Image 1 (spheres, rainbow, N blue to C red):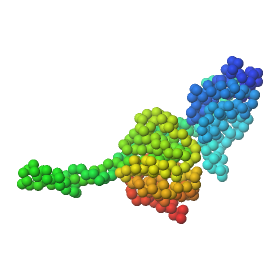
Image 2 (spheres, rainbow, N blue to C red):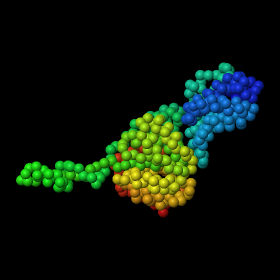
Image 3 (cartoon, one colour):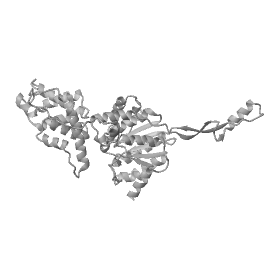
Image 4 (cartoon, rainbow, N blue to C red):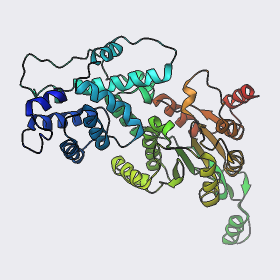
Length: 425
């Protein structure tokens, strides 16, 4: 891992890749892309080639131009910027590397909690990527005396108990992969509800007059054997509405794996995602292979990690899909943090209509991972009075609790909603 300036001085040209003298630079860019991929960024061979072309175009005279050339090719979402920035300055030898390593090894507690914790989590994931053998089996400068920095980090492999309680946002790349495997093994216990249709049952409470008269005719009318029936039971439809805005980006991708498991575990499951618009992804999640399913979803959804219009999205759902998917007492999971770009405009009426159209409305909010959370945003205040239950959905343990709730639905409003309403009042 050599400094960009050393490449520029050693080659004596602004375009080392184009003149054939940039073999070391091309190798460095390739290994830098591997580090980003190991840290969780979607960097493939095509992006590596484009990155080399971009560096060939801008040259190496200016470090800032080199930074933004790689940034333009390798970063395509807002949540990837900080990880790329940290990786760039560590890999290409920022003079402040020592300060970053000290902050990584000896973290301090400050008042600004959320931003600092997010930065440390990204550095942890990046350190894990830099520790891999892929960055240790090559020496681009041929200098045996120069040793890459070593990161003495805690092991990223966790047992099931530690992993189940870890926040999705704080997981390393290896822990995220293990969490995805754990989600794929989840199964929703069979929960059935009575319907209006009846079926024959010898222990039923209602007499089946038609079947009884038919039996009497077969016996000649001397006796009338009574036949009984009871309501037929069936699993209610499950509807999932997942927020994929920027504030939910750390959780929505893991929750899509959970939605895929539910879609393949039972029938009549309908899945929707929304940011600034509503997208029906039901048929894509029915693919058995999760990678193929999520690839189809990624191609169909256009508003990843953007703003949130909860009221407008629910209005479109109620108008276009409500009558189709909310029949027969559907259970609705609304997955959002309640942060609405429109300030909750029209949300109260739409969430009330949704609540009246389904059997049970459960609000899954990752912000409930904070013990002192209060619904202060206008969107959260509009949602809370119209839900039957509110739960956190930020780790594997919360997903396991959710499956238990869905397996034994209680039509009464939960105590958590009542206590939160008292705080608002």
